Length: 385
Ligand code: PMP
Ligand code: GLN
Image 1 (cartoon, helix red, strand yellow):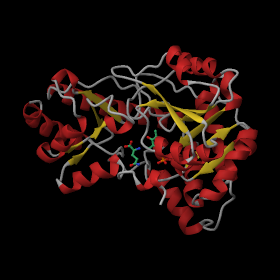
Image 2: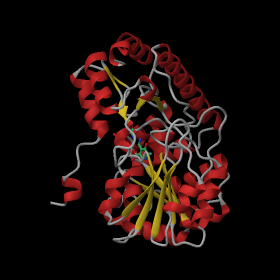
Image 3: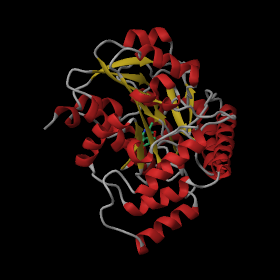
């Protein structure tokens, strides 16, 4: 068996969700909303299953969805995208990531990852034969510097994989930081793969900036999106890749032998959803922001001060000021003794350099959040010792 996968534990999300079930805990671990998602979009999918096309759609995706993706990114991010030559539909962002790494990386190539790195990245990089180089980010603001990039990017760098907005940190990188990346990779053979699945989930009036909006990066970047995150329908594995035609051609070769296509009914529902008015996405952000603030207040009252979150569904608590340095042990006690599941952020680091941060998902209804806060308030004094 291949030792890279054979040697892996089950993902931290599976592990914590299983513990949550075992202990009948409130699950603020794995990131999925309580809300069932927009009903009109779900109805479109149901109609398409009953009355629509259920055979193989085109390999690159339904033309109506590829056009909707291009239109959506023009309307929301000001990006000029050629639907026919620059957009491909995948079975979730996860497939897009796997395909991009398989298509771009040759054994021995270096891949720059920012830690905390979403859990799928490192095993996929290694399986593609890539050699990871890490840029380490730290709380409270998780920023990176030009000096860190200069150290990580070498003539052997093939891919720089950036997650923006970033899971689990909740950091959102703007034009100035993306320009640092453009400058650091200028003149190299590096392709920037930007996992932008959280692009619509940004708070406090922020706007998402895509790598494709940075002129120096437009031709040498791959943008990855996910309908799961855009519509709070995380089980819908419908993703999109946007890249310059020469790059997209290669990515399509990987896609055709990984999944080949993505369910056409979900594709047509997503095409419909992407055309919803801007007010829909604004309301989603406002709603999630209110949930972020509700959980932050509750955590604070329980003595667990939340770090700032600029985007995503997640709030983090740094345990270091409480003198605690083992996030995984804390999460195991939290789920068993307090009945609340969370995610230890050390799971997103390859080494043991960061072991004091715990991630909580706030994309939940008020009763779930308040219930979790009540349990945390009761248990925190005990757990802090
Ligand atoms: N990338 C990041 C950063 C994510 O947070 C997630 C899911 N939470 C994914 C990729 C996976 O997206 P999908 O479900 O579309 O495969
Ligand atoms: N991306 C989700 C999270 O961060 C989990 C996805 C998964 O379970 N693989 O919570």
